[in-house]
Amino acid sequence: MSELDRLTALFRALGADDDASDWAESEVEEGLPQLARYRLLRAVWQDVDAWAAEAPRWVAAYRTDGVAAGAVDRALAAGLTPEDLGELAREVARETAFGVLHALADPADGSLPAATERQLPGWRLAELAPDGEPTGRHLDALHEDFAGLEPQTATP
Image (cartoon, rainbow, N blue to C red):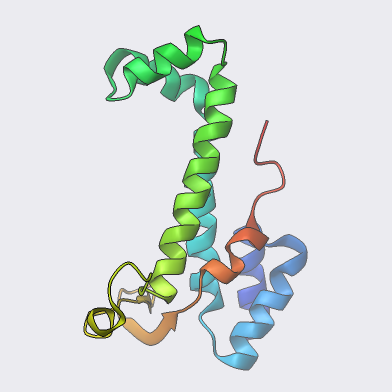
């Protein structure tokens, strides 16, 4: 089995479906850590989607033991359903995830003087091999692919 075939199969296993070969070709031909990139973005979307998909469960949990119990109770009393709250929570999670991914690419957000921002450290995500060893490749500009990987069945 070629490296391209192996990667295509892994992308398909992660749900890339029709785009699996494109992701795999990009990794093989350009040397980019596309499998790590796709896997991370998929995991982020799973967490974002859970806010809508699991709304009845988390709404019930928040009502009994949550810091937002009062807000949840008021929202329900105002006529919102757990599904409405889930849709809202998912949107907040989506915006937050995008913001974090964007900050990874460009930590200077303009909230400090430019001279100060230039002195501050940045950060990056590094790809690890299955054995946990660094590959030397980094995942950059994750926010650029985030919206394009949004699951089509995200909202109920």
